[in-house]
Image 1 (tube, rainbow, N blue to C red):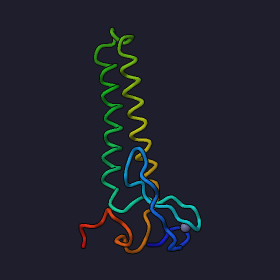
Image 2 (cartoon, rainbow, N blue to C red; image 1 turned 90 degrees about the vertical axis):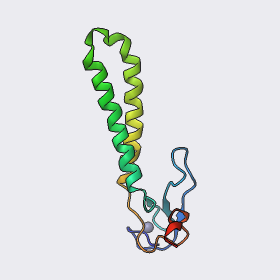
Image 3 (tube, rainbow, N blue to C red; image 1 turned 180 degrees about the vertical axis):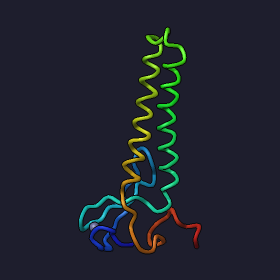
Image 4 (cartoon, rainbow, N blue to C red; image 1 turned 90 degrees about the horizontal axis):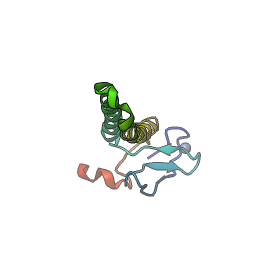
Length: 113
Ligand SMILES: [Zn+2]
């Protein structure tokens, strides 16, 4: 695999994060953080879930405005989850994917063998 920014093949897998076991790659040469192959649908789904939290929150606040005060802690919780979900997936979606053969040291693409 090669770095899409500098073309170097010195790409290392990043350690699993608290959010995903497949946290992508890092280029040793230029330090670019890269997204793993095949993770696009995962992050699009996570983005959709994040947006859904906002929709539910808005619906909750609009439906019964009289009880707004009691719903604010719940609404803030939903908004926080929405921000984490959509923010994290947007950040991941903006990252480049390494070029070249993804089967090289990539345990997430074993099904192609
Ligand atoms: Zn690079």
